[in-house]
Image (tube, rainbow, N blue to C red; front, side, top):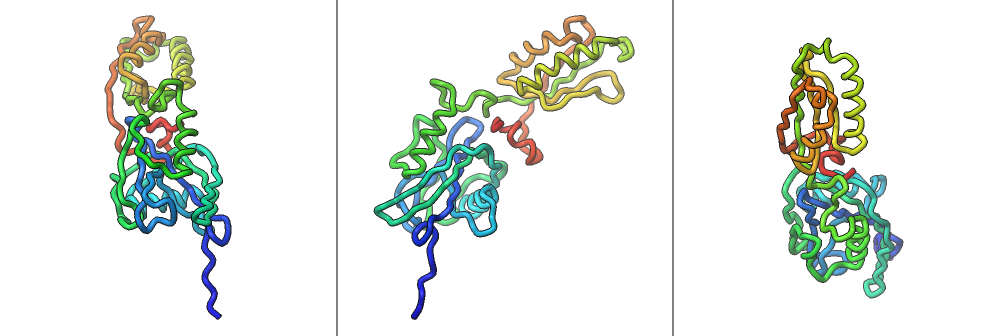
Length: 258
């Protein structure tokens, strides 16, 4: 007698993992399930896949995105965990979904029989029909946003990035106790989530700050209260840049996931 191999989600509860991938404009990445998909064919979804034995949820999700769409992602905060029960198809999955960002690559369809279409969509342009789990994911994602907001805005993807050059007008030895006051002032920027790192340039004729803010004007306004500025001890110059490459451990800060 030949035995049929047991199938995850059919013969036992399967474990899947999903990604709500957000781009810098706040758009969401969705894929339309193709004719060879395991279930809910023709529905749009937040992409994901099955977790393999011995694989962490995050590693499984990264693998699936690489295999199916050719992208490297960073896995951020857990959005939800949902019982994905499909009585008509006789399937039961448990599926955690994470908020994610693309670290490298442009999404493309690698397995066309499993995926018919892909796209980036604003919150008010989400295509239909959505899969059962993606409908719940979308509801939960919307609940994480401020009222009347179409994009996450607390430390959001709309943040701009800057190098702040603080040019001293006097020798560093003459700054005196203002150094302590300046550093106490910078701490407010760290607590706000705007500053990543800061310190004196070598030789010590200036200071450098790596920062982010909604706009140059808001960042400049913040530094108007820098004791160096108030006491006329330094000039501040703001250089905006686009961090297209960065170490993975900086992903949440750069992309606004944190």
